[in-house]
Length: 256
Image (cartoon, rainbow, N blue to C red; front, side, top):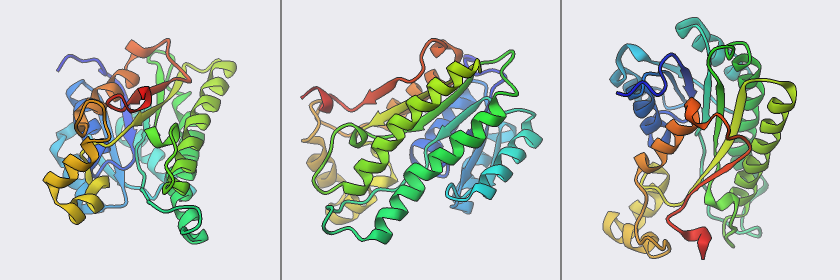
């Protein structure tokens, strides 16, 4: 532990698995206290328990404004402040604009975009109370699919692109308002996390890695920690001059 996040309190959505769970572990290693939130209660509690006294679990449906208010209040009650918000919760859906139903479209946007909006809205309102000594950071997980479109990713492209520009708007709002809060978006490509389980179940682990890896110039899937350390950097004061930016972690896809 190098104490890069010493004294900071972070709330992470989607923390029961994948990028959220990995980020929770790395942030605690670097000295933060972390509230893990998710709708998956058992898995979320298991992640928080592994973090010891620096971890705590709160059930949070990111589409519920009341849930957001309660989760932020419990974070402050437990650890005394909120400095970092990582919006990591999200779902994927591979359907074209013709195939997707309105119900599916709304569900993807409710979780992947509305959930981020609610986090930013209520997170900024709380973080600004605690940033006199420590800078605040809002980190929104978008996707390379928020920058590069796919024919069968209509709702996911739309929602993740929304996260990209929402993050810039939040960054400008915080800067203009004089808050010591930064907001940045992160854009991974295929990372070997449970969001790829549908491909894993269909093809098996080895074939899935080959099929998806062929689409990446580096030639493989990403590992959670290859995103996680970037999240630690954005949460830390090392990134104090960085706001409204896009961190692209895509193995070179966007360079093609």
